[in-house]
Length: 527
Ligand code: SGN
Ligand code: CA
Image 1 (cartoon, helix red, strand yellow):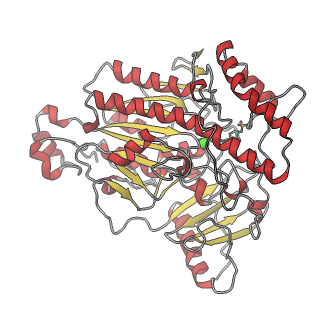
Image 2 (cartoon, rainbow, N blue to C red):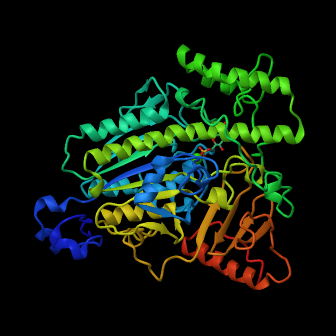
Image 3 (cartoon, protein in one colour):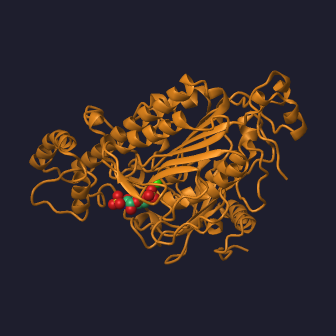
């Protein structure tokens, strides 16, 4: 069955605004009133709530991202299904958990099966024009897009290579976040059939490692003082998987590649990769870049910091470089918002800003993501809503990136296929409070053994508790009371007094694994 698309404006439709308009009602409207909503979906890489001032004011100002939250909605419980780029993107585009879309990890080298149904394909069938620019990271070439241009793999910040739609490759001069925005705005400006609704996906590489700032942002944040997270020196007691990871700022961050302390005679595991990134810069970019870092490098080697001083210095360096990359991103999101505003498109366009997952900014001593702990399980999600979608402010319901596909399908008037796992967010965007909204979230991470050595795990979270099972080369359960222990420092699994909640959360886990038909199931340890 095909539903009618969401109709955003029209006096006669005031009462029905924001709901799925029955086909007959839609037909009664004059043609110009029947334009379905456009979708502008902006997704960054590794951007986390701690580094967005509409979520967290401690570290950075993001005025343009905050415009979205201020004038639209901010999801305060937004999560991913698998906290890693490729898998997260596959969940998002299919509306299904990893085991069902087949793309469980980045490193196995198995391409995403682009012949499977994805929301851009459904949108195309419903009459939408679809476009994608930026990071794709699914190995196979994009399908379901009328226009696309993507970077190979992770992409490069400076003078990046793009894969063009005809399969050729070309290098563009400039900084990637600017270039992806330029391409997106060019596409908006030059669309041939402007009567068609569109879905534009702007996928940034920013803020991915190794945080190379645009030259114009290099000087920013150098005077800022950063307070260490309270659990920066976490000893991982009672959490074996957390103890055995390789994503510690203190022990795993590369002095040259991540922290930029390049010096003659200093070779690190990733200094060659850093050199190859620098070699992409033209002489002016490189001169400006090196002129900025040289005094910092000189001071670093002169100071010979040790122990806690060195640990603090690494954290600060990381925060500064990450922040510079956010600065460029925020500015470029502002350019997109300005374009939509200046072309009177905001009344008819749903604008979404999110990331492929959250990230650790020193919590537990870490960078990177992957774990089901809050910082990386969560992902920022703010939206500017068109006329007819009346929610404003905070939306507290638990949502997940598998929900975007069904949302876009409902907007386009396409019925959700039965095998799609996510739920449409439209009721929430209309300001409704559905009583039967999901009460728990399911998560499954697979990439191990691999970079950063985060063990395989799955788990569930409800509004208070989180149960995780680490499996494969270990068999460890973790249980957290997020109300009492929001930083997840105290694994209470097996502790006296937790029997009842453990049994309940086991049941929730079992129900989720059955509901989503995950073939990797746990052995129920509690009868
Ligand atoms: C690269 C990074 C890792 C990162 C993965 C996955 N290493 O391999 O630090 O965890 O990407 O990130 S690097 O030496 O290449 O920078 S993801 O966001 O794409 O999944
Ligand atoms: Ca990522």
